Amino acid sequence: MTQEKWGQLRQRLLKTVGQNNFTTWIEPLEFQQLEDGIATFNVPTNFMGNYVSQNFADLILHELRTENATINRLNFTVAANMSEKPRSMPAKPLAAPAKVAPSSALNTAPLDRRFTFDSFVVGKPNELAHAAAKRVAEGGPVTFNPLFLYGGVGLGKTHLMHAIAWELQQTRPDLSVLYLSAEQFMYRFVQALRDRKMMDFKEIFRNVDVLMVDDVQFIAGKDSTQEEFFHTFNALVDQNRQIIISADRAPGEIKDLEDRVKSRLQCGLVVDLHPTDYELRLGILQSKVEQQSQNYPDLSIAPGVLEFLAHRISTNVRVLEGALTRLFAFASLVGREIDMDLTQDCLADVLRASERKITIEEIQRRVSEHYNIRLSDMIGPKRLRSYARPRQVAMYLSKHLTSRSLPEIGRRFGGRDHTTVMHGVRRIEELKVQDGQIAEDLEMLRRALEA
Image (cartoon, rainbow, N blue to C red):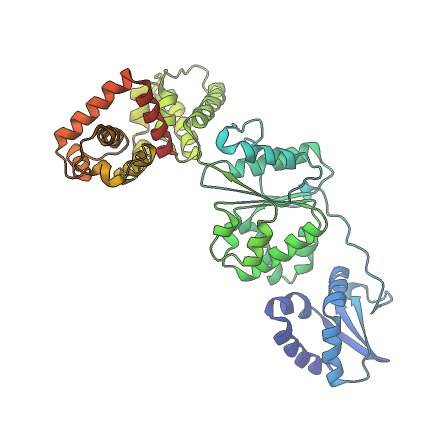
């Protein structure tokens, strides 16, 4: 058996095991010698020797015997310890790798000190996600693994991930916690492949007590990274180690994510962080005002400003917090109270960007569903009160929740004149004061449309 023959055999193994397995497990093997029917290979680490013995030894032995029928056993020895007695296969299982260092030594991604459970404002849209995160942060056994948090931009996924990591570091310092983004996971994987340090990569990631991966949708379409993530996931679950994942959508909705990865991600607790409602946004603003007041003790904020912001900036909590930060900084620089005039001047661009994106068609559909009438009847010519009142409600909401002109709104309601729209809007404004049911319907529809 020569080095040249081993090189030829490796090419046959490549076709059998695939490029990823070959690069990770077969290519690092170095043929050392053949003696008394025993083929000896150098391996970089004990972990690799054990893994190859258990998963690829029979295949390697079969290929070797096609060249030399006298080979009946394989030995694996760590290259740096050639003086030690080689381990032969079959052999007693190698000792498990030593437990990795505490989380401080794991090169965890930086954690934002602002993102703790104490600073997280809980409301109906994020109540379940907060409760599940708190349970995992206790560090004890849980009945769901993984915990998968998903939701749109700025709804609190990363805040909860950081809060879990902070809590675990404080209450369970004995646990090794590794938090990083999916992009960082991919980067470390590629770097390990390039530097031929896959064993180090595997020993770190497969021996943590808690693995936290943020924005997992970024590994979609990256086949090799997905495969390594899949094996890491399985190894940790088999050892009852906790996994916490976040993404911008549910596992089944992530395009280009392998079905087997989707299946694993769905096997635990999948929690949706819903878009914020008005009450939650107002609560977040009130919490942030308390923090800002510590930096700007001399500034006051006029009544109605927070309510105005909570109504107008409804899609993204980060934008909402940034708007408040800008307000305090601007008011401090010009020496003015934070009132409505200053707010609209300072945040003109933010308010324009956050302008309602609600369409007239969406309003018509919602209103017709609410009053249980057909859409064609609401925008049609019939003047029955059961159709006219919902029509006027829809006109009122179109006037206040969109930037469309009255003539444009009239055209969308069966080609009606703008004066008809004006009459409908005025009538609803009057009824809103007189009829509590109309006021309640308007508020309910507005919230549903802004959600």
